[in-house]
Length: 141
Image 1: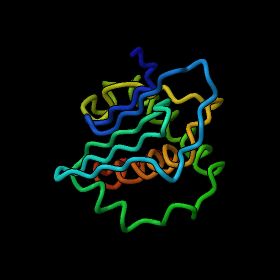
Image 2: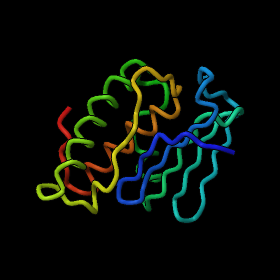
Image 3: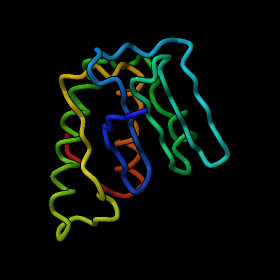
């Protein structure tokens, strides 16, 4: 299967993968699969597996449980915040002499014209909040 990658790995922590890029992405449905393993791996995938987000960060799952619940923010709000956060993150990737390349190893290819659905945007936004808190970063948004 050929995957089109919405490449996100921050400190080897977050990855979003997409396939069937020629089709319009579907919203995540209530029957999504969520797997939490002992090492705080969270995987969210929609039925058609067009987009998947995998978060591999110790402590993220328990931290996420203390945050505002799903549905608190609108998808539009999350998409707008993620666009700003991704842009700042990518600026830091492009400046390895100024920002730690171990924290900012790869660009994130987040397309603002793609509907990744609520769950992907929710997890991405909260991962950025977690990343900023854990690594004492300020991605100004």
